[in-house]
Image (cartoon, rainbow, N blue to C red; front, side, top):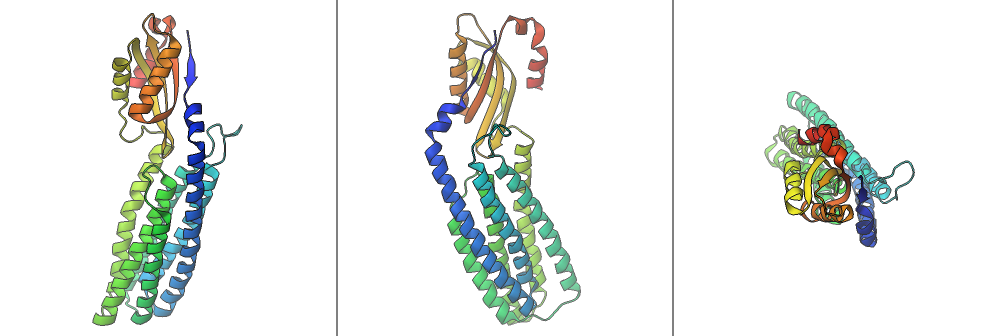
Length: 317
């Protein structure tokens, strides 16, 4: 006796209009952020070249990467709303995770470049027009604050927007560092402040980029979602649903930042109808573990005779 059932249709259709509306709003915000970031990047690049400030040039280089990142984030949000097709049966939702992973890698490379340039400036200080540097840095700070507001609140499960916000926060920190460096250079004639603040800001960016890289890589490797214990999930299903004898061959992963999936095999006591058991298991997984798409297979006597021994061992290892 084998039975399979999926639980995604009802829930996906019930919330499709809201999801689509939120997706369109997110796309619009990302597009505005891309335009503003691109303009500010050009202003900072020209200002950094004229003033001779590494802090401004580093922030402009950061914003060049960020402008590209915001563009790819917009493309990722657009593709994520495309329906599934014959080649991609789960649709394009995981594209947002791939974008987040790529963006975090670009941030790490940018940090390496900033630190390299800062070391050169420490060894060979160069003159800086602090007045020009200060004006441009303040403009960049104000624009980045506005862009951060345009992007809205942080959704922990949306890696695409999380990556975009990471880049903008990095820009914001870069602008704060540039303003501080400009003030110190202007009033204390301390040229070392310019590369010093560049290094400090780059280390802050590196910390956030590393966290995003680890999280998105975990999803791409189909790791167990954060906060989910597979052994505890198995125990709650076995103890929480009367008539379920055993749960094995359990796999839980994320399609994208906010979509948890699961597959599992179940053995039932006599008298419990397979369809009732499947529905009960799916409802428990959704209510307690936020699993929106579950595939449940009911195993029969051949499993009890030893056919599922390997599956049971694999799910518990």
